[in-house]
Image (tube, rainbow, N blue to C red; front, side):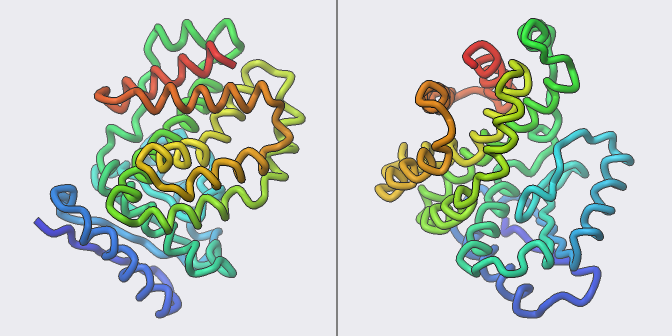
Length: 277
């Protein structure tokens, strides 16, 4: 079965962007094979950040969704309504090089193929997990935040690895290099939270969003990824050597969590973050 793409633009959107989105989406779908059994994929292009934010506020209120701030991303994906959806903001992408936008579209389409069901957006908080977090200051709201950020990193790891395996790793190399080109905001946050056990763990979970995909590409033999790993370490040079080694070790251990369900992998990674950092 071929996946049907429905592209929705609520306002007048640049025709060039619409054509690029469709072209780059098809570059992924034509490599999907059995993954393309999803009958439909919704891609909505919003003109402004304000319109997209208003949409997300309505959706979260209607569905009881608790996540982080979506505007930190160049595009977003979800399956809150039971089918894969991608949201792109024309204003958010303005001034972004086309090679980076291509990487974003490849990335989000891969998410839709791999994470197109509610399972990947509904997180469980077992007694075991809550008991592990409580002594470290991770009450339920903070634990929810940590789990959400870890879920982003793990899902990104999965999609980037698959894209590399099907020959589209080049776009992810460009995208990740772009994402780590400016870590000044992360550095400022780190200086504020590093003294708090709970907030430090949440910050480290944020940093894994780019480190996990790099390690995934290294694992499948993408030679350029090793250089990108060095760039990541340089970009986050304000981390101590011990903190860097801890993140690297954590990433390697989590990469070996194969054969488990997403929820099991996520809980295992969360407990590892709690106990290791």
